[in-house]
Image 1: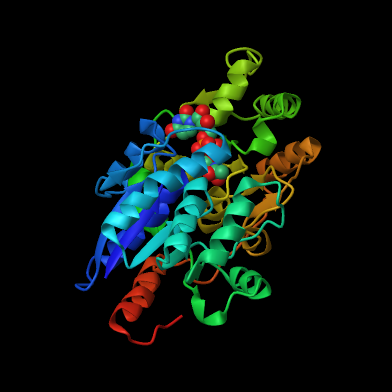
Image 2 (image 1 turned 90 degrees about the vertical axis):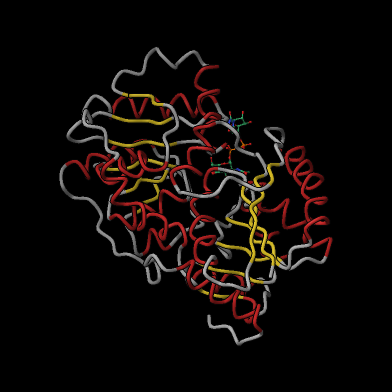
Amino acid sequence: MNICHVVGARPNFMKAAPVLRALRPYAAVEQFVVHTGQHYDFNMSDVFFQQLEMPPPDVNLQVGSGSHAQQTAEIMSRFEPVVLEHRPDLVLVYGDVNSTVAAALVCAKLGIALGHVEAGLRAFDRTMPEEINRLLTDQMADLLFTPSEDGNANLAREGVSREKIHLVGNVMIDTLVRMLPAARQAIAADLPERFVLVTLHRPSNVDDPKWLGDLLEALAAIGQQIPVLFPVHPRTRQQIESRGKLHANLPGIRLLEPLPYLEFLGLQTRAAVVVTDSGGIQEETTFLGVPCLTVRENTERPITVTTGTNLLVGRDLQKLRAEVGRVLSGNAKHGCVPPLWDGHAAGRIAAVIAGKATGATSRG
Ligand code: UD1
């Protein structure tokens, strides 16, 4: 069985790494990796391959940046000939980025079997580009690997037949569990005793200059009480720079380059609280038991709120500041780790796929 993994953007790499590893022992499985090139900076891509000990991609489509339509179309037209040449038996796509839906569309058109890792997540917010990517990819997939029960319920509601759906747990946590000892070693010696860790990159937070300015001011106010460390995504950096705010008016906020996986995970383990709009970081903080304040109105990962340490602060900056204050005064929300977020999700995915390859009945 020949399996093609498609990755493209930063959050894909830590999801694909454990699946590649888990499939390796199966003699009947051959695999290759296609990188779309959606993310291309060293800090957004290559360093993840190095740290996660992933082999370099077999094919790089080098699509780069563009509008959503351009990027998606470019990935499709460059991925199609790769599929036609290699004729994989199964293509695995990850998460909800443009690379995910673009590769899925190519497979659907060519009649190639498609597996979606991290299926079924829904924010019920179609203004998010990722929500469209999730909905469409799940409609096209033949195998849907969900991280939590809510994913199964969402897919059932959308009419996806039960036998395609496999509740396997969270592959991102597989990587976290494996890398945690190394991440603790990667913690910089000069780190402040207590700090707030921030990441922001969603269009809803960074594309509107007024809102981004208000958000940065709220963070600067928090920075008067406790150091704020903020590794800045390239899209956010462009927006901050275009406002001339990068070096001015932000005392208390330490702006950093995007960090490699280990260094960022190390920071999460030591943060007093994390303020973010990322999806994956909501999950990582829940696993680590670190309080997380999500600057969004909704989340496609509700289990991090109902079970974990995550709290949605929406667009309420008073609430953001009050909740940071609550954490700093020792009254943080506590949480538990969701079922099957145990470091073995990729093994369960590999067992399902290998079961298909040999014709055996799959578990799941
Ligand atoms: C993408 C995903 C988002 C994910 C995020 C993680 C989609 C729709 N969005 O958003 O779900 O949470 O990745 O990072 O797929 N850029 C660089 N260097 C790079 C990559 C991007 O400078 O290596 C800049 C470019 O100016 C680009 C902008 O960042 O236009 C945005 O990149 P893009 O891949 O379009 O979306 P992200 O915001 O990274």
